[in-house]
Length: 360
Ligand code: ADP
Image (cartoon, rainbow, N blue to C red; front, side, top):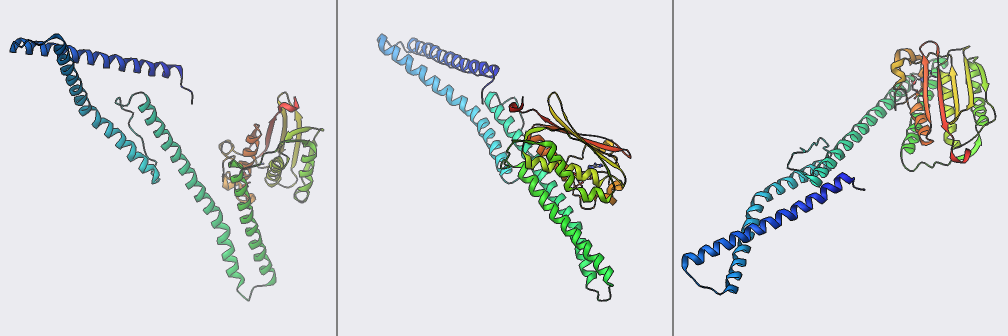
């Protein structure tokens, strides 16, 4: 880490001041030594040769210096011991997982010691935030796993009843199948998100035709939009981008699946691809249930599922991870994703990808 000029000047000033204090203290000790020996000779009337007097002056001066250092240490050391004791205690608490640490930035901590205390406080704060996120994640995952498992257990139990009609049996089995798929999708998405958040995610941007990729995703979703009789409007001019094709495929799949999922039958979807000054923009617009302004602020958070009263009947299977994955992938590409929406009217998700140096 490079030091800021102000800090550097402060350090130099402190070293110069220390040298000044030491020189003044030794001069004072030797002056006192001189007057002490002078007084001694006058009082006793002793007549020593010059050289021996100088030697005695030096000896008494040095003795006074040593005494002064000892007295200084007597007061300063307990403070040092107290400081390092506090630091040691704080580090031991951190090691045990207690991050509620805020060391006092008292005046007694100067310069580098104060920087050290600040760094330690900052480290404890960051670790505390990470711990909170970890606990939130565990609680969200447990909650998401719990409801399909409860439902699977309940229906498996009911299926043990021999008096069930074949239709009921088939119905319960299909619920078990749906819930298992939901669990498997949850674990898939969690793995994806963890991999994207780790440093190990392979990120391989290559040039490819984005318009073809978007058409392919729309084709792959054909059964879903046909079933809802959605009208499709595509404006996809030939466009080559440099991006990670596989990851971007995931982005379009999540956004288009949501657009279909949250749009009632006979609605419409619009997909527009445009070149802009700074790169390219893809807009996915639906005439679905829309998203309230409060939800718009949070839908890209992990496990956030929007207003449950409006989406409960639709979200079946969603775990609130799809948009968090989209955001992470777009961040990796240094792009942006935003939503414009009006409850009851529809939503537009807009993805902007920057021009990469090789494209300009
Ligand atoms: P999920 O898998 O639950 O759909 P997402 O992260 O993909 O999770 O979406 C989070 C929430 O955002 C959804 O639960 C829903 O409330 C809202 N949402 C996302 N896309 C749309 C859309 N096109 N129309 C309306 N609401 C949407």
